[in-house]
Length: 326
Image 1 (tube, rainbow, N blue to C red):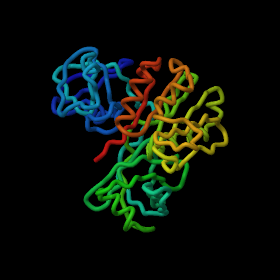
Image 2: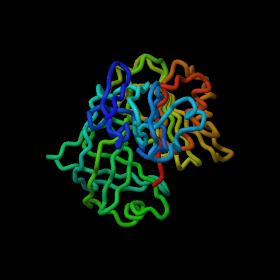
Image 3: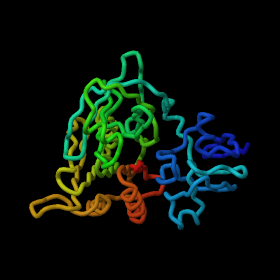
Image 4: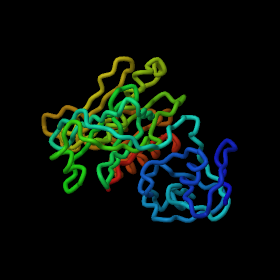
């Protein structure tokens, strides 16, 4: 067993065969994570002291980040005691992952390739989560991960699901699914949720169905509107065509600067053009006084992080949830 030291004198023990993330979770220490496959950067950590080895390739890290001592805790196992420059998130009281039954309560296409799905949970099976987290939907012998698109104050779980050609769950959902079909859900999973901050600007970036957890976060903020009176809140929602922008904020208690962005706009499009990360710069937001939440494709997350940090965003003020293809 090795001793793993974190910020604020927090530490835990980790066996040589466990990843750092698994070792932490076994001792109720909560570290940032999302994909658990080394492909995103949610579990990125700076090594202050000690050594470890990667069980699989850390494709979520650049060569430059690796040279600066960064690792991904979801795929790293310790080979000595370690000191990591990361914090324990246990204070946010994340629920333990569990599996419960659910039934389809509503299903409808909201664009040519996106479905809105509502699942209901049995009254005797409570399922609590933090806005922004995701779950695995299980059908038979396979499961797929989807972000929850609403807050836990709602009676149903809402999802925006894209139709992927050749995908088993996509084929079921878009061709066979019907109300009252029985499914199972496993969760809640992930650490993409709102963190309290003293910074003035709260910036959200989303592409495609990546709007789902961002929608949940904004609605959670709206429910607690008085906490955000002094914040400047921005939402940049990107797609290829107008059809991809299938949701826009309609909130009562917070003001959101909504910037729709198209990468393949037509001549009549009056909004922002290009990519969401570039649109952020055009708004001239003081990124040094900002936190940024990004959800969407791996490439968008990577580009957004690099661009925002290069323009003043603090490295520890970027939170992301990359949608990793199966």
